Image (cartoon, rainbow, N blue to C red):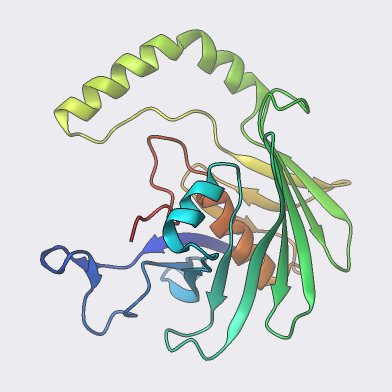
Length: 229
């Protein structure tokens, strides 16, 4: 069965400084949801795991690609579904490990930023602990060739959109199709969903992938983990 996972912001009360409304998973700002059934249900509650130094230290480290967060099964934080930690980050290359709730390794992710020495497009490698790796590239190369010559136009449109408040800002190609041999087990679509095609895929690993990819939204996007409080 195909699953479509997406990070969703929980509703907050603007008059209370962005605090979650009563009864809406208080203490959490975002969740991973599954939209594959025509309606959504919560797969995991997302929470940053802060290093010594708290939020300022986390935000400083994330500039180099570091990430650290927990996926909880319920808002009461009784069950850890998975934990993502950074094993190395810097020079455009970041590596993460995803651990299950019992301390078992679920898999690893490696992000190699575009033009970091490995290619013209950002490359994501997903490796299951018990299976082969799947490699995906951000955007089709054809659409990047179309995008870059028109970049000055996109900038003008983006600036005009910001001033008009329409929010309709052009985005670069974002689709990622992960391939493992002849199979395409995972796909990140431009509507910010990770679609899980392979029946063997671990939903915990897929949810962690959804969260970490969305944390690398562009400067005009809204990464879920960059909150300053």
